[in-house]
Length: 249
Ligand SMILES: [Zn+2]
Ligand SMILES: [Zn+2]
Image 1 (spheres, rainbow, N blue to C red):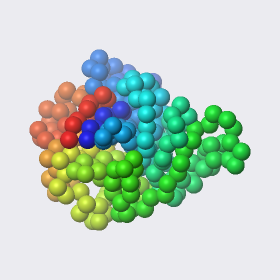
Image 2: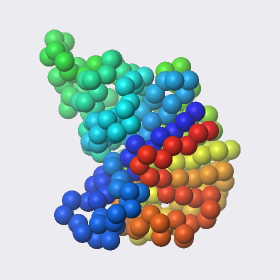
Image 3: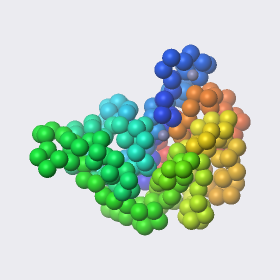
Image 4: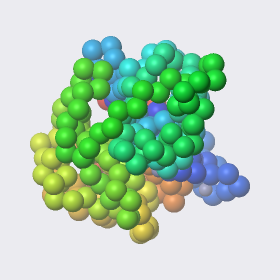
C-alpha cells in the first residue's frame, strides 16, 4: 500500500488568499499546501480520500488517470468541491454517510437526475455506517466516527494505516480501533486552540495514548508555522506531511 499526500492544507489552503505572513510568503515548497486529500494505492487500484477544490490540479500534478473509489470524510466544501471534475473519469464508487449522500444529491442534482445532462460526473453513491467495514475497490475499509465539534464525520482505517482529519474529539469506540497502527494521518490545524479542529498539544496527547509507529499531521493552517521550524519542535515519530509526500507501507 502506498499513500500519496495530494493536499495537506486546511480549508483556506496555504498560502492563504490576501495574507503575506512568513508562512504564506515562504519559498519552501513544503509550505505550499493544497486542500487536504490523499490517494491510497493498493494493487494498482487508486482510492481517493476526499475530493476538495484542488482535486483537478492534484490529478494533473500527479498524472492520476484512474480512480476506483472515493471515500468522503464529510460534506464541507474543502472536502467535496472537486467532485464535479470527477466527470473526466469513468463511473466512480463514492462512499459516504447518509447525510453526506443527501447533501451531494442536493448540491449536484444534475448528476443524479433521472435524465442526466450528458457529460456530468458519474458518481455511484454507497452509504456507509460508522464501525461497519466495507469494501472499496476490493480493499477492506473501516469507517470510524470522529467529532468535528458537533458534526459527526468519518475517518478511515485501511490495514495498519488510519486517516482521520477535521476532528476535535474521538469516541472510545474509535480510539480502540486506532491501536496497533504503523501510520496515523491526523488533521492537526495549528498550535493555538480551535473549536472544531485538533491543536498540536491535543494531537500529541492522543499520539501518546495510541502509540502509532509514525504520525503525520495534515489539514494545516498557515498558523501552524514554517514546516522546517515546526518539525524541529516535534518528536521524531511525529512529522508534518507535505504535498507530494509518498509513504510506502
Ligand atoms: Zn476541512
Ligand atoms: Zn499567512
